[in-house]
Length: 497
Ligand code: AHR
Image (cartoon, rainbow, N blue to C red; front, side):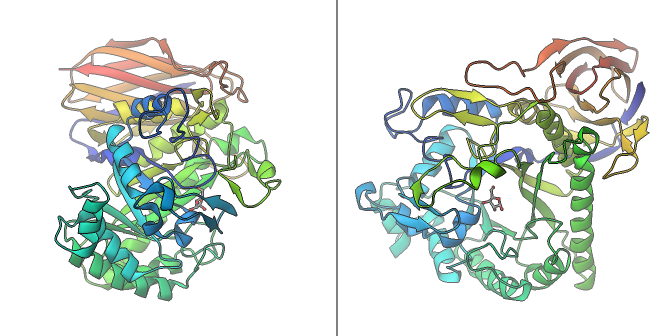
């Protein structure tokens, strides 16, 4: 099979906001406890954070991490996580029916995030809490001093403000499963008033309002339109959440799920722009796709969990090769929408539907999906170029006209390189791929490929067979060529003059 992509230096989508390679840490399962934090582990630092996990997180190059939830957020008192650890309350977490010990709170998490070179995307509880708790939290984190909450922060060991820039106004408030679930009008009014005062406390912060928890929600679209009617002028981003699975074991449809993500993003953009027009506003609202991933392997197991355990192993999806290919397609889709998607957070970071797995008291390892995430965050920088792609298409149960090749190119002016990400969805045919680079002068090209594995192949603590290998790419004049193996994720890096 053959495919050709043409890109031109002057035909661009957008500068890529690096925050689209974000992640998410929720106080649930073993994400925090025995994930990032395990005092007593042989690699733990003096604060109890696992050193082996820190190294893997740094390797992922994550620019921003959403915290502390998730469904957990809607019953969380941030004040439980400050002050002497020994005096922090143990609480029932009603979202996941577990016990939260509060050993980790805002001080510990922001300190850890700094060490792994990530900024924090902080979320405030709009389930059981509201305006007062939110404005106090902004004051605690960001006000320099001389007031009750900022002085309490200093007393608790942080003389300098945390300077948290991005704040989420609640989590999935459209979902009946959410503690303090609200109608769109109830949430919209609360978010509007809270946003106003949070920005009065610190005018430099950016706010994310809750969009629908999935495009499948019956209230999707009307939720967005109603909420935005209230908050349009007060917030900077609207959130999207979406998880995928191969429950039907139908590979053709599964690898095409990025078409659904693209459709979801385009639909939310249309709603934002409808509200913009309705309000005769000059402001264009951007999107934060702040929960996305594959989530389905662990569903059956999780039904067996006994309630009220401390950090039980829940949502521990073990990812396989086909999941890594879909994650590659989803990352490409985020880049192709980088003119409006400015933040995106893969959910989650460690153990809970995560690229990194750990064993309590033991090893930490890279799941299959680790690699496309790491390579996208490391090499997917600069300006996204408009991809004009000529490639055969297929129909499947869930979608029609799916291109066999999902691809995008980026120009990194600082490094003088054009980078191309490509997933060959064909199960049996190599893709002879030519990329014409107009306005560039290509000199060298390298290929890294994730290919040649059984689609159900996983990585384990003992061995990681699913990992990228070097392939071959060639330059001939303005054209870069590579043979992309059947079912493969590929990174082509082209040196340009
Ligand atoms: O990431 C797991 C859960 O998925 C989050 O807690 C919630 O926001 C979503 O439903």
